[in-house]
Length: 157
Image (cartoon, rainbow, N blue to C red):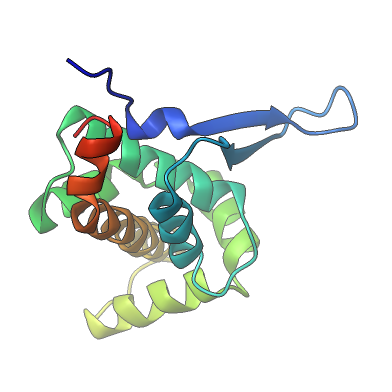
């Protein structure tokens, strides 16, 4: 029986410099499958590399590993669980993404779903939900496309 590796283990956190800085960078390990790197690039849309997007990609991989992210219905549940519950965190997220493709895409999806007339914090939660769902869908789609290759390479499914 061949050893298997979980998708979430291909991510690593690096301490940012200068020393004492609390922020950590998220990246992929060198032994990651190429399709995962490509999926993460796709998840970034045209945005520059971003730790939050990497963290959402890792969360999607972890959910695939545990079997809770398997189809469209599970994407909605996954994304709903990833939305920040605190207003300040939602505003911080919006400040980081307000000029990004990630934000614009989420805003477009929210508008398509009739999202309006709510307070700002509620709307930011919906935007974050749509961003999380799009990222999870991107990772799940790539995983399903390359699932057979993963079985052969010893990555657990």
